[in-house]
Image: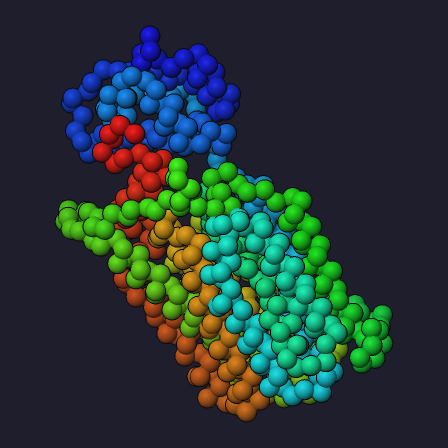
Length: 543
């Protein structure tokens, strides 16, 4: 009878989608013994189970409409009191890395390969034009400032046209910028080319997609793989330059100039990356490519977040303002990103001037040192994967120790050896995955469904702003103060403040997996998001 049990067609469809035996009995009898709180918890569980069984082929709205066709549900009863699903032989498989995320790893690798070539060769392009070292600091600051302006724009566009189209447009703009770097002789056009070439960064979109498309149990591991596929390609900038050095003579302002040919290689890689994104990337089901769900009128759905959330901690019950808590976490994480990026950028930019001007090393020697600096730091993200059983808080502590020692070795005034920047920069670079991987993963775990693309865009924009300011600071003070305690104290102080923010108990405790405040907020925010996405009234009334 209708309402007694699911039809044979529905049963067969669900069985095919789950790949197993499914036995669902939509019972119609009232169960007055269940209290309201238990019904609400089972409502959420039921919606999640039915959504899982339906898979990607059926939308959430379609699931609710199909359920509402039963007469018992249409009378205005809540799903829990009317539908008692008995699900047999349906076990959720262990989480795996989605195919689209794997394609994104390849895309990120090619993107960093092209970026690494530009970052390495732009110093010699500036020297070929006869410009001073301040121009190098200006160009670096411009490149690092691009994400500050463009990250929110990329996220806004991704919600309209999707992440795939945004990535392709950004790469095509970057290709135009690399072309200008190859052929222009004017400072203004050269600066504009550096600005456009930095468009291929689009790191927040890649990070946001990985965080949205992966299960929380493998999120830190996938973020580490993303960092490995990105940072692991940095040495190829020096490798590509050395390759063309052995094949091409140094003839300035001609197409046979090895520096220009190296830059043109970056252009080719950028265009190959466009083809990869165009042909192989497909949005993972459930992410929508960052496109916002819309209502029947075509307007984006707005989630109504519950303001006051009940928290039970050690037998004590109190209320917490969810909006204020989310804004506080975002602000503190953004400030941490800004300060730490500013400190590290001083060393990244000071590295080349120190090697060339302080130690007077030949170009080939500089290339070898840069190559060693990048190669030795490559396994750092894999160490995070190996330490996947460790908490994000533990990884942050490890990164803090490695970074402190690296900065001290790089700028220590007690020794004057070219081994200082070699080993110091290796440790500073190796520490970066221990900062950003657990920071991004921890932020997404603390914020849950509220860790949207906009939130991550804000974080990366603040990180880019810190990098831009640190690049200017490094270019200004590297040659003057290098080898003194002033250089170390000025550059290390922002990183020290950043770690003080992370270790503040009000932030550090929230990163724990069993923190009662975080668990209560995540549960309520998840329910708010489900209610909005499924267009299901919170009181269970008729749709």
